[in-house]
Length: 168
Length: 168
DNA sequence: CTAAACTTTCAATATTTATTGAAAGTTTAG
DNA sequence: CTAAACTTTCAATAAATATTGAAAGTTTAG
Image: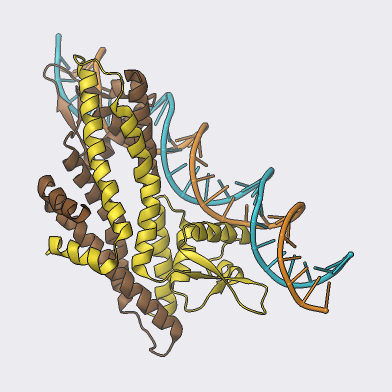
């Protein structure tokens, strides 16, 4: 496979992956493009390569910057802004884990904990089933939450060497 | 908080969680409803409780059954079909992990591995950056894939006791 | 066999989400 | 200061996704 084709495929796959969770396709594609770029890219170049509008590029770059996956870079003597992606894969993984935790785990955990002390009548089977499910779920989700916390603090070699002991 | 309100909140939160990954809201809500139901429910009851159409209920129940999160139950002497959710939370977690792996991890891993042997010119910095990123990503995604595999085979007490040693 | 009871399908429709692009805003060179 | 070079915003529009509901299909009781 030749380079331009490989590049296209990577950008497109990363875009699909993104939209399989809640990330929008363009944001993931901009990210993919920056991930493999050997140089900072300008908004112009990104719009051009991905055939997206200026507004779209701008908005998704802003989101990527918010996530801290991308940062602005200024070239002295040039008025344009350039963009670079964080290249360290472990750092990227942690950023994504952090955002997914924030969006997926934390809100649910909060609700589950509130629902734990709802006003139950002990003898009512509906109430019993509800309590059981909520309790079980909040245990599990709580464990997931803690696991991600460890990952967020850990450094890669420690995390995976420990995990790979599990795996082997 | 009173029961009906707690129930409503749980169903609605679970629905939101679902749509934060690629699951559609109704499917997640049907699942939530069945999770807390002390009895098998008929399609009618589900439609009624969630105010959704027959077609919608049918389609999402079918999907839940495909995922093996829900199964049909026949009541002797009744022509209706009834539906029950798997109640074991660890089993549910594994089913969801299995599906997310299938949809999110595997396709990307496949593409990354294909892209590893693209036709690179060693001296071209674009090609170098590409190779590096693809290599790093496929390492990481490969590790994630293996981790999920372990979880799929493990039983809960073993998995979490090992994991919690990590965590503590 | 056939009519009632139920389930499934799917084209039409509604809802949600993403994208565009032109106008407004900002910054800086001169 | 002001005009050119650039970035941001956001209402309009397009695209993707989910939902409806009525018609078609299936099963079973009698």
